[in-house]
Amino acid sequence: MQKQQWLQHAVAPRPVCFASTIDKQGNINLSPFSFFNLFSSNPPVVVFSPSRRVRDNTTKHTLQNVLEVPEVVINIVDYDMVQQVSLSSCEFPKEVNEFVKAGFTQEAATIVRPPMVKESKVKMECKVLEVKPLGEEGGAGNLVICEVLKMHVDDAILNAEKTMIDQRKLHHIARLGGDWYCKVDATNLFAVEKPNVKLGIGIDALPESIRNSSILTGNNLGQLANVHEYPVVDNTFEDEQLKNIIQYFSLNTDEMDKELHKYAKELLDAGKVKEAWQVLLADS
Image (cartoon, rainbow, N blue to C red; front, side, top):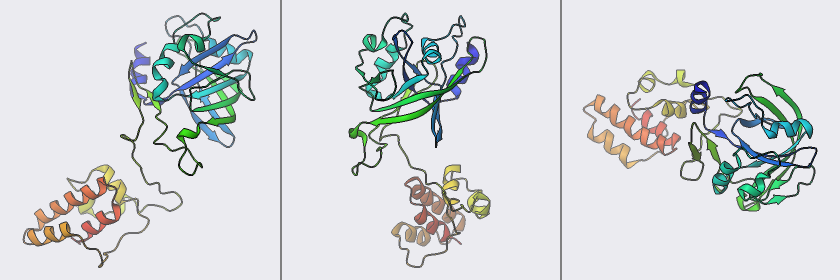
């Protein structure tokens, strides 16, 4: 139990799989799992793990169901649903339908037998490719490897062009340790530019004065080192604050370096990498 708690606090946040399944008798189960993620896009494969219960080593109805009927609908959980989703995790008897207990609306899937959660803004109809046990003791996971056959996405979370999900509109929740969760929304989103095909110059290529700065953080250095070519001074670059720093501290180069690094850090924290480079190059 202690091992589980340490791991769940450390390996976080974890997305939540809200899985609806069905057994051969037609009993429906709806249950959340935070051991869940995307593992392949072609073919589209997601994996979740209904672990054996730590306290008594019993298995969950979801696991029993996918072994009988290898189909599942994975309903993505957002903030509007989180309290009801938590309620559905209660260990109701097998014949009890968690859709009813948690107040969710059943919606018929188009390909698989388990129903979808109407309130979920993203639903994935899946076939189970394999169930891989990871152990036989309490706490052991069972990897349910699923191929996504069809996705249903609410128009309300699409971008203006209706071509992609707008990350700012889908308020994912994620599981942490204990009773803790976190919420994804526009107030805590940030963008990190990816190198993609071109290679960044690397932190080792930065001048020593920048690499060893007492002001610039590791994140700042990562931003500076993600440019594809080492920048050069742009003679057309004009910045009043830069001019003031050079004018005021021209007789004290150590203080000027500090002020330039402070200003560069402000620019980097605002995502203005090109401008930050010009500020730092002013001291070269």
